[in-house]
Length: 405
Image (cartoon, rainbow, N blue to C red; front, top):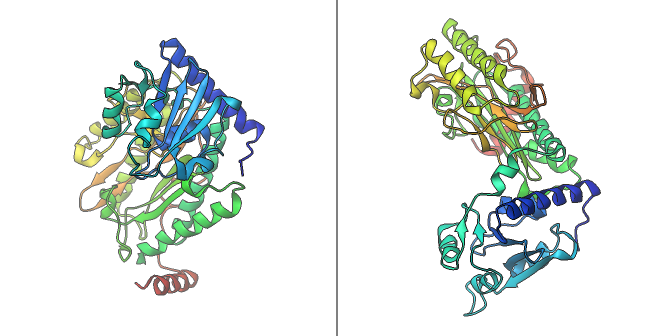
């Protein structure tokens, strides 16, 4: 059964297709080969997991055609993807590993002419085949994806709504001595909420990560907290990343489960001030690198210029993924434009003690910005918790028993 796309969805996919074709024509290119699941989703709305069976979308300007080359197993499924009328064909190749003459190389290379381009994220082995066939690597789609349409903004705002809800649930379950597994359970409840509320839930295009990073592990933001670790004091970081039907957002808050010490309060305040410095510069026309540079300058003056205490840039972009351009970093060449989506998340990390980081999903507007995850409080008073309530103790007991911890 073919999927029926709404008028708004069809208009959005047509806009994306037309922009890409115009870029190819400007560069004098006749064909572009796309291989990543995100690129294919961006132009068709179709989701699939390639595994050892690669997918290809060929944009053929000279023929005014699009060709999807997919394993036979996925041919009918991929027919559900959006395509510009009769201009799209879905071609199949035999199951991997295919008999001689029936594999993906045979189906794909028969379509291509020397001089075609392919996206740089193409896996090395497949890229080698494309180069040997007269192709060259060229990034065309990524710059087009950085500035979002109003359609995309609305969907990222929906993902941001779920990210906010997830952080609120983690904070509601926070108390001194709580185990990480109690926060991890937010992943389950948040996924259930998305399934219940979204009219067109796509399991392959939806993902959720929700958990508290307890001190001192919060000073290692990409470490993975164990389920039995406990929230003792702080600073802890509640983190929720969402990708809802293909569109991503995030929200993070530093919080405490005991009254903060004077030093903890000072570092929390410095983190808030670093955010203010960053937000003050967010508007169209500003170099993303200048935002990060301003934050670096401020924190260096305050004695936190050591890379071990900063660890990462001020922010990154959102779209189909939780990390994509524009990069809000001193090495970035990107300039902010209206309808770009970025995070603002300058962090301070004290090894062995903990980390201080709020993160928000932020829309660049015509004259500044709008925080899409701004409903969650940022002040230290609202983010300080204490001993558990009776309801929290009962909930914790049930969760631990169910989880076997």
